Length: 397
Image (cartoon, rainbow, N blue to C red; front, side, top):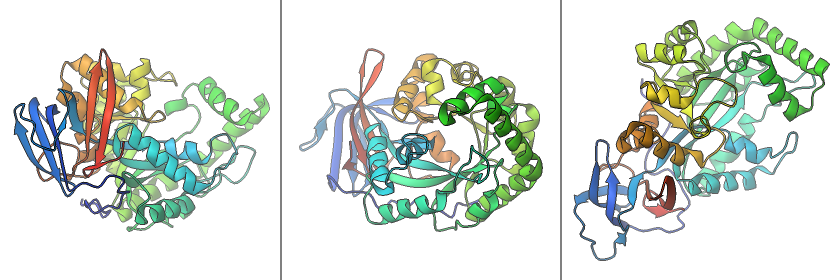
């Protein structure tokens, strides 16, 4: 299926350092299948030439043997939500939050981001979740249209199955809203990410300050919502993703049966499978597996689920997402390069593979005719130091 959301190079971004001609020379260019010593030239936002050798043309930037890689493509980040609600129940003005989020993301090397917004709210009970996605999406799209952003933004709608208003909220979005991903989020207590209720209690208790009885009431509320709306919400979200032309993603699949259901729903990739069993079932069905960069950097999941490094070592990892730490994305790619002893393959997990998963075929790899989204990276011991970020040839970090 062809996506209906726009991915053209004309996407409006802030032109802070507009240059019709950028050349990064004397660099180690990380291509799709090898590392090439040479130079990359960008004109009018598009890669127009890749050449081999140590020659530094007049006016080029001497990269002094640093790596040049494609700009990072981020499919699932909670970073915008963190900016609009820096503390529980503390609202921050949206436009400053959007601009700060964009600048932070750009500074970490991400040049394409799918901003995750929750759709599906709970208006009753102490642990409620207000609806906010439509209003915030309008503000984001307006800021983008007015050229306030440094990088390319799309929407990722996180469809909360255990909610009261999911289908009503999804219905407010249309094909012009740049919705690229709809993910099916079933946070029913006792399964998937929260198989261990103590993990959920720690997560929600700290965030909302619940007593034991209030937490028990919250669990019962979610179980009731899943029983009442689960099947209808899941089927409705699948239908809405199709209407929007968005890629459908699963979330926290744990069993082979979960994956079989996701496959039947037509998902394009699997976010954060919680077990090796689920990841293997994805591989059998040709479903790309995405894991979180913090999991990879920390050596395990904060929820006690499968370690991303274990999936990497068993060839069950395709895409990496920064999740809740934007700067972790670049670091995770270089960590994977150590595990696999294959830098191009590792870089692909944060560039080409995510771009391919969401049908953005104009970016994610260093090749002529594609978007001029590039990073300059220096390796200091085991640490990747970001030295420059260009979005469509414009320096943004």
